[in-house]
Image 1: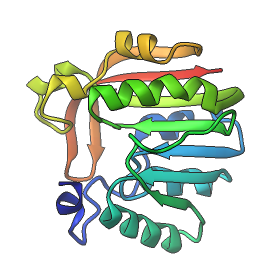
Image 2: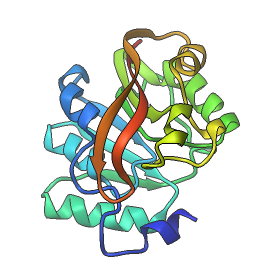
Image 3: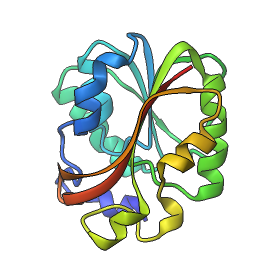
Image 4: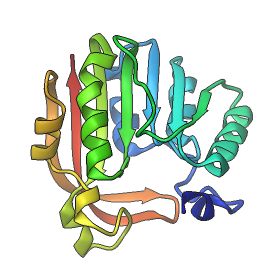
Length: 194
């Protein structure tokens, strides 16, 4: 499914970083950063340009080929990994930062992934996350088609136990990220540390 969506010359989510990430990148400690479901590489390439050592995981080899091209065009290195997040081992105390931008995956996969995030972050490591909430369904400006793939502040509090939230808010904001996320969006934004 994702390979078909990404099979175009155009970067369907654009080449610029997510706005929430760009505004808060300084909150992520310099070091090893993991980007979850990073697609065509816009966020991982941005982080590499900021001096982070970045690993980006995605299940679409088509998207990762485009991400490699974007990294090369920006003269940065990103370790791109083709893997399903259901099978990907986050490790233990491995990451200074984890970035999850519109990583909408089935609930059982997400719960397992989120459960492992606290132990995979180093001490003082930071997770930065933005996702669509169920209120997004009324906008139709991007995101998954069903509520069970979306998140709320309550979801994040429950699933990211062991972390201290510095920001956790649901809001509506204008999103302009390629052709797939454009218009008013209902999102949850979270920033938490170990």
